[in-house]
Length: 150
Image 1 (cartoon, rainbow, N blue to C red):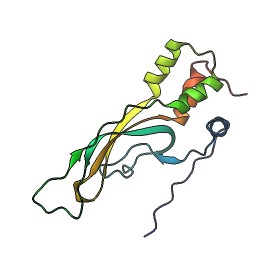
Image 2: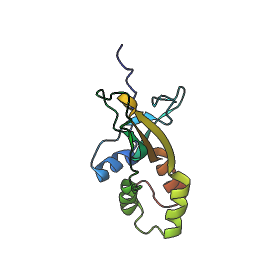
Image 3: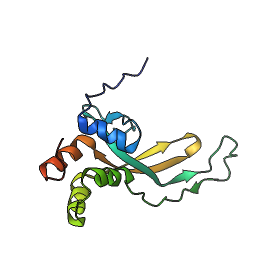
């Protein structure tokens, strides 16, 4: 059965400018994931700036395991990356933003989540993700006088 295609929302002038600045096309995706990593039923589709990284897990399992020894070993956590696209956008849209304005924006808009990528033979990777919903960023910048549509 073919997967249902996610309907892309109409792009605002802000969205178009964002894609020009970051240099790639942003995709719509569900706002929340379900227990299986797929879209949570009933959740809206949004466009996000996001980054994910490994925070743990287990690896080493294989089809050649003899069942006597456990070859699994922990996966080391990666350092938490910065959401560089957000910084790049703010540099263009509001280059005079103060540190406190940036801090309030970050606290209000950057969301976090975790999920697990399961593989065969008991291997899995725990992942963390942080993201900003693009429409929320646009509205926040307008509401706080940090950007005006020209």
